[in-house]
Length: 273
Ligand SMILES: Cc1cc2nc3c(=O)[nH]c(=O)nc-3n(C[C@H](O)[C@H](O)[C@H](O)COP(=O)(O)O)c2cc1C
Image (cartoon, rainbow, N blue to C red; front, side, top):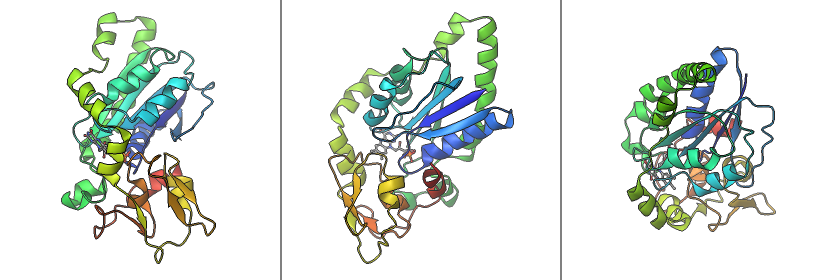
């Protein structure tokens, strides 16, 4: 079976979670492609038999940049599941992901959440060492993700033979009106301002490696100047804080992040994508 895990990730926590889910499927001789969603991404999904769709919670919902792209993709009526990571209050994130694709996809097979704490650079030092290593996810979250393929493949095999309407309905993620209302207040502008803030560049530290613009930023908010140093477009920024968390030279800072240690474990997940 060919599986696509489409995920959005700013600083790598959801990327790590997706990679754990993938490792479970890979043990059972399926092939898995990890596809990171960015602004204006398009994917050809024709060859895939199963989809996993994941995103972090942004202001109690799935980031709008993600749901907008998902709505445009064609999932060819194939089965799917959803996953998310959050700082502990995911709100309607799983529901938003489910709603964005269920019309074009087929059988819904379930959902999984990784709860941790936020990966924002200025908040990381408040975590214990073990939690910081996993970007806020717990060991339990990662183990659950690695075993998630058993639930998914079990349901797929069972329901393809004999659909169980009651069970199928019971696994659809819940929607909460209260979070809908809250999420309505938190626009991208608020997210950018509160979670990341205006970004500055330490020109002494920047080595013009271009990673922030070409590999890290998922929202197209960083372009390059002639000298290959980044220029920030705060209007496109979604506040993921990936650039300041993952800059190899720690050259990007905001008033919130200054003087805090760098969070770098997930460089490998984002830079691989
Ligand atoms: C802009 C923004 C908004 C967030 N909103 C929420 C939220 O409403 N609830 C929550 O539990 N965590 C929230 N978080 C925390 C993220 O969901 C959490 O850190 C997630 O694991 C980040 O995943 P990533 O590294 O893949 O981007 C928010 C983080 C950011 C950057």
